[in-house]
Image (cartoon, rainbow, N blue to C red; front, side, top):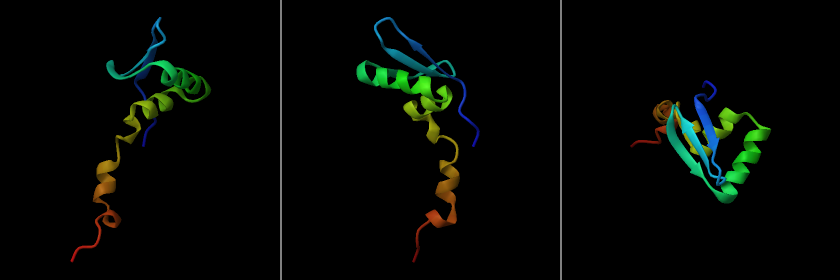
Length: 76
């Protein structure tokens, strides 16, 4: 799976952080969550951190995994 891309974030004057993906708002963080996000984004790969915080890291292979034979369960 390719690395996440097209994420960006803006820190507003009141401390709120708005994360966008392809110019669309993906998440708004306030208070402790915003502070924790800011700390994490400084210490890691910013694109991966933003993908994880918005939940966008899940996109890509769910359909393939759902259709895999080992995930079909036993059928009578």
